[in-house]
Image 1 (cartoon, one colour):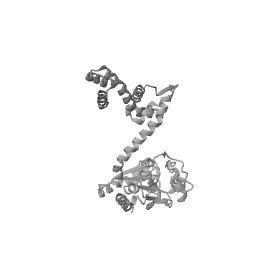
Image 2: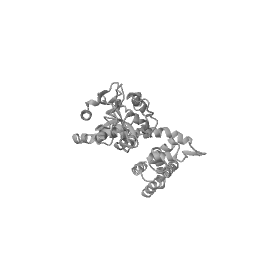
Image 3: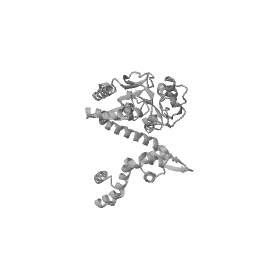
Image 4: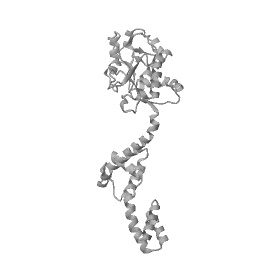
Length: 351
């Protein structure tokens, strides 16, 4: 019994090597056939219960089973479909049972695959959560600012270098999205929101009130034909952009329609049907700079384009809809020094 115990300890110490090689080495060391047989029976039962296949193979199977597609799994894991197939095949060989099967063009899980999928998916989610928690210390030092893409490109990003010069140790992440970030969960610290009238329990500071104008390039205004009066817009191209993403603010959508603005400045008779439509406001602005039409622009946001003369307001007519841009945060976030620094800086820049 002592020799079996010592041999088992030796097997455990070299468990990372292939089973047949380990047993062969032990056989050569012991030179005892009876002892060799005991080792085989004991070591196989111990190793089979604790052996885990490659995590890469398990991950490949989990993604494939979840998507029911080798290609979708490959896209998710940034590898080729052939690599995914190979990993799944290796896992099936290791398990000793098929995990997936084809039914026509569709992919189905076998009973063995079904038994493992839920636990594997849960396990990989827990691994991801553990890694996120391990990284959280670094992320806690980063300031996350949520802002819509048009404001970020036209106003915030061109001014952001001055903040970095004042506060070089503060890392800022600009989260550019049309969706309103959830500041309450702490993953985003500051939001810049347009046209939201009720911020709930958030702490809000007004950056500036909106002022909308019909803007174009100097070349387009000069003509021919020259455009000097609001009535001239009847023959001009009015650039538009898709407002469907502003699901959270009816005011924002309404006031960025040409029809609403024309009515506000007394030009109801002008039809806004002519001109290109974009799904990105920045593209509409660039088209206006290139002389392709008029864009309904925010004077505060596009101020630098007006100052440099890339865009002009040939009519000196504007509409003030009573909405504006606000900087919002939570009471908890205000306890962070970097949040206070950023809010002070951006309010100074808006004056």
